[in-house]
Length: 551
Image 1 (cartoon, rainbow, N blue to C red):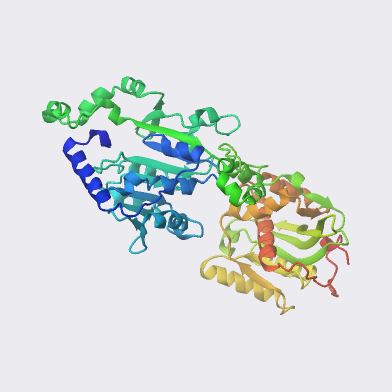
Image 2 (image 1 turned 180 degrees about the vertical axis):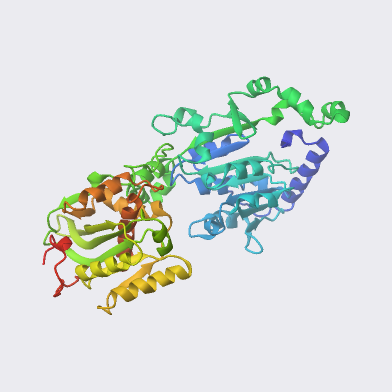
């Protein structure tokens, strides 16, 4: 059970007050200007006295800076017994560019903080106060804090943590420093996270946006088992759950009366209840950022529509579903590529769908290969005749078939012959020795007749949804086109429309995976804006899938 500062014994309070005053008495020679929270939502975050506060719900709101600033109020770091810990899910999130370490240096060095990197990340202040950075990569990592007393706990990006991690550390939020223990957290929206349910009272269930009138309103909760119960005041919970009786049950019978009558302890039923509020904020609540970096707004606006709703507008309901990752109307159908588009590169990417062993056991596996051409085109011309250029991608073909062992390699070889040697061939690299075997097999088969053919496997970049988002975003901006062909266009568009990143009936994911891979390869390997790939000249049969291309 967490003891509040006001419930500490007078003896302890006196001791803490004396230690803090003693430190201040000998450290008043140099005036230190402490950081202040920005007016508006950030200031509200620092003003409300609740046990737990979640701040944010969109990108660019100044969440991390507000969290760092809130943890180093003068009354905190002048206290020798102050111990605070900020958590991220993984260690690299602290040290990445613009992360907690970088931001904390800007705030903590001017107030005489000393940064310690080993054995762990920690800020130490002249009084002896400490602010530490720790990660909780694994679910059970929380148990190393068993027995800890953490005055102030911070979670940066709370949706990355599990509900059990959060509530376990809430039990470690205690202190005899004289400072009231508290938990502060930041986050961005995630409709599937436990946080979305936890803050649902503050969110409009119809449109997913925060209800501004409820911003900062404090409510109260208790947790029994895995269920959180809410009320507008403590008395509701005390009466509903008979917390007076629960309190008696918690204390051994032989010391109940003595314990409860002790004025210095003065434990009450309301001490079993936690106070909480949610303060939503967006980039428009962070005037300092807009003033210094107004183009960041454009960065958020250019995101995929689902991420834009989340990170720009703070939508807690929107999520990736069929029809939200891709919309078939985003793909313009071309009869031929415009003559003034400059060719940059060509890739056919194969999603092999399964290992050879899995293919042998499961005839429902599909192998999908998507051929994509990358162009540079003039988007518009300014009054001074300056040309604004952008990349455009034309999906020229998709093959998607069920093949048995041995047939896949032959299909890849024949397709490479038809595409021509200037079309790079890529596929997803499988792990382990089997992946190397597949790579060698495909490479040898395709290079049998064309030793110089550009052929290689690509290491996968995240899960299916993560891989699909870049090309989906480009499609939403009108940069992805499809060459008209009645034999595969409808099947391809149906797959894109039905994709949501989850396990689907084949061949939906197979087709989208091959598109994602082709786009990734073109984005990362074919970047030269002005280079023009020569027109294909080959004695091989003309690929019917290239019939709409000029030249």
